[in-house]
Image (cartoon, rainbow over all chains, first blue to last red; front, side, top):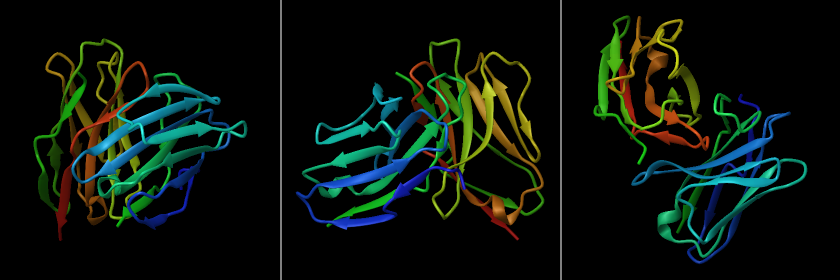
Amino acid sequence: DSGVTQTPKHLITATGQRVTLRCSPRSGDLSVYWYQQSLDQGLQFLIQYYNGEERAKGNILERFSAQQFPDLHSELNLSSLELGDSALYFCASSVSALLDNEQFFGPGTRLTVL
Amino acid sequence: AQTVTQSQPEMSVQEAETVTLSCTYDTSESDYYLFWYKQPPSRQMILVIRQEAYKQQNATENRFSVNFQKAAKSFSLKISDSQLGDAAMYFCAYVQYGNKLVFGAGTILRVKS
């Protein structure tokens, strides 16, 4: 158990819908990262937040957005869902934004878009 | 562009034997870190070992060790005395300034009893 929690574990929804994935980082960790793992794209970095502020952006679609709240939990919002958005979404956290900080991964949320 | 290449989609090893998984990466930075992550069927991402680019000494964690060749941009993982529990997908990853992990496509490791 990494100490990072993600809810829900599984999510099944229809095309065009909107969903919210939630992540609680390890106690004391200020940085949160979101990654997407899909069959065709592999594991890709989406976005990073540090202490409530966006720190880095990767291959995140405009239909996707995220935020980190004052209590440091983070939410990833996915809207106008398409079949290709079906994937495993990981949240990871680290103590700070320093390069040598280990990122601890949560168990992931499996999203299925029908 | 930062890229990580794992040229072996799948590998097999006999229990108690040794196996080496290959990884190459591309970067122009001098300060970065390299990792091997294990993803078992549970899908949990588990850090196996990490290597700081500024360290010449290869990292070791129990049965897991790396062969880090900085000039060649090569970072292979050696698993000694393979166990059934080592069966998983293994990802090589790289991080530099900006902290985003860049992953390879992964290598499926099968362990035969």
